Length: 500
Image (cartoon, rainbow, N blue to C red; front, side):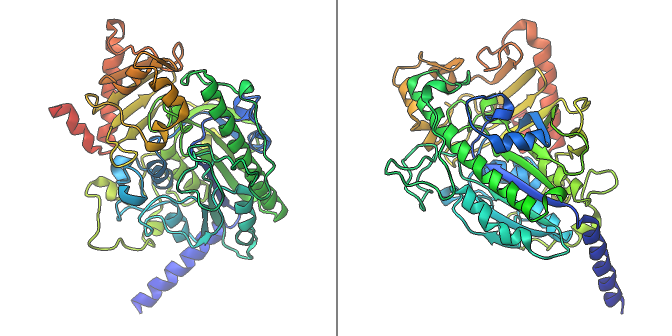
């Protein structure tokens, strides 16, 4: 009898949760290797009318950051609200890299499923194990074809159900195309552009860009080769934008737009040396545009500093499944999660507490520019590919940024696609003194223990202030705050302060 009564209580609790959230759908749209490059971010060359419209109807974050500029690792942070040193997903999931999260943590789709949501993913996945990142449905479609992806989501969005939905929509553009691109003919090491034979993507109108017109960011060299690569990148971003527009149109047509939280982000910055795999601004600084249908103020641009550990708590806050303090998931939701399997890798620290996060909800920042308490982010990177061990820890404030290169005696390791990038090779062949953005080839490869940058006066991070006596007190303060972050998040690499 007690078991039966308990089941009834759980059932009615679930019904109450569903009823509370029935008008609160969530779409998380994640692109692959895109910096804050869009019209709404001040770039008047790249064509992104749909993202610009989303920003005009929502909130644009000027200072949004990934915590690790690596595809799998970043996606694990996005979906767990935990830094990689706590969730265990240190690098790539695929092939021989075989990184995955600890099996006794949980993720956004699992929390929302336990709260009564329908969940589906479409496009790039790139995390493991599946029981940690479990969705009800997989919606097929080439992740290089965003309009087709959007069309394929129609049945899921339109399904008659009293349960709200969560759609995780992930493109593979503008990631450089390579061996993973099998459904269409891609040229190697290009930004997903169609092959010269004219074959293209269904539903897409290509938007070619003259290399002479592109805006070359200061962390890259302004060379003809680099301009040609950026033009390809712009074209790929414009394809994504058309998929975004089609998905938004479907939500509007199916009368879901006015009760759907829409979050647009990238996993990290552009796939170029100086950005991806680094924690320089080109790698960390990412787009984030959010439309909350229940906000009164629209077209807001906020200076609140957020990072990807904040995405999951924000979505759960919108779904009304956080506790009264909004610092963890309600216990009745956590109790509905399936138990982790036995005999597999688990995390043995305080982070095993399911429903707790390193991040927090940024919903309160969406309607105003006055955002006290949102003026610092931290980052934690360890691997990209398995052979690329180069742990870095970062603390970044409104003006100053400190990078601790834990393995600084080692040369900086290169991802295979970035090493082959024509822009990098053109400079590398000129020797260590060749200019590469605000650095040289030599200073990019061999880095010091600490890198301290004044981003107001040195936005492209070419002048390291760590050895400047005038900044000794600042270095000490930021170092202490970085260590506090490591203590707070149970970072195993904090031991490196003791014996290396």
